[in-house]
Length: 124
Image (cartoon, one colour):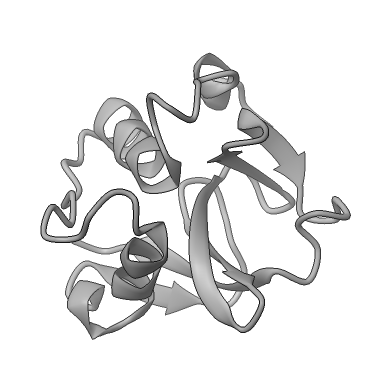
C-alpha cells in the first residue's frame, strides 16, 4: 500500500465530511475537480451518497466489483447508502466520520465490514 493517503489521516471531520474528503483526494492526487453536489445541503450527507450511487452521478462513475486505489466505496447505514470513502488499496479505505476524523481502516474492521454496498470508479 502506497503512502499517498497519509497526509489526509487526521483531517478533522469539521474540515472535510466524507464527500469533501473524496473531493480533496481526487483534486490533489488525480487532478480531478469532482462535483460538490452543491445543490445538496452538506448536513444531508445521505443525499450526497445517494446522488453518487444513483443516476445523478452515472456520467462520471461506473460500478466496479472490487475496489482498488482511488475507487469510491459506498457504505450503508441501516438499509440505505449514506457514506462514502476512498479506497487506498484493495483491502483498506480512507474515510471520515464525526467520531474518528479521517482514518484508514481495513474493510474487515468491525465498524466497516458488511456496510460496503459497492464501489464506483471515476471515468469522467
